Image (cartoon, rainbow, N blue to C red; front, side):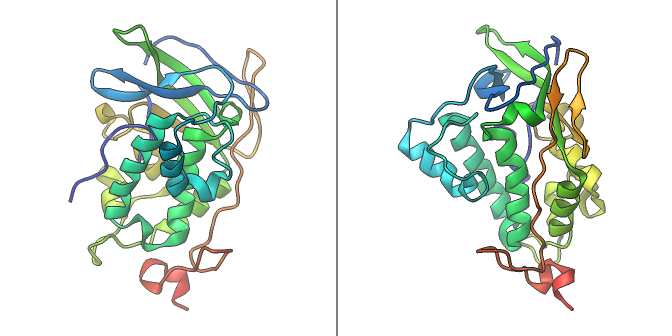
Length: 255
């Protein structure tokens, strides 16, 4: 069974290298938006500006299907465009095909990590651009980034997925979503795979380092980054419309 293909922030993450620019802004602001081609890799374009509305109704509907429950009102300005929305939806279909939706809590938590990175209008609060590159068309794309997120959310995301089966019941979901680690996946290894480029054994079009912290991070130039802090869904508990997972996909649900 194939693994997920590399493109815009998806069942996978994205980044690549050179130039040292750092953006950090309060309020609604982006660090990336749109897609810039680089040697066949569809990496996010550097965008130091305010979020914009996705004008295409079909693209908004597509994004609604994958991020609507974790981002809220998608008719508001966002830090992703129509092309990214469509790429992400396509990648997510690949993740669903191997079993991501077998446990609803796992799916919601994973999509939260990805949708926030890709589209959040407050992207610049927790995403730090480290390096970028310029392609032949003089477009600047993201090469490396830091993604600040709380340990609690990452642990909750991992715990909600660690028992999930793939579409092949005897095989763990992580055999397809954690690279070379397979069933020996840990939360650190999973994040490492999600943020790795093909050159480093991953599928991300850019290199993303997940920085786990409960505290704000200050940079020498005066920038401040606030870790993404959200309450993770638990696999053995109902929460709103998200139902507890089955015993087959959540050991905590067996007792």
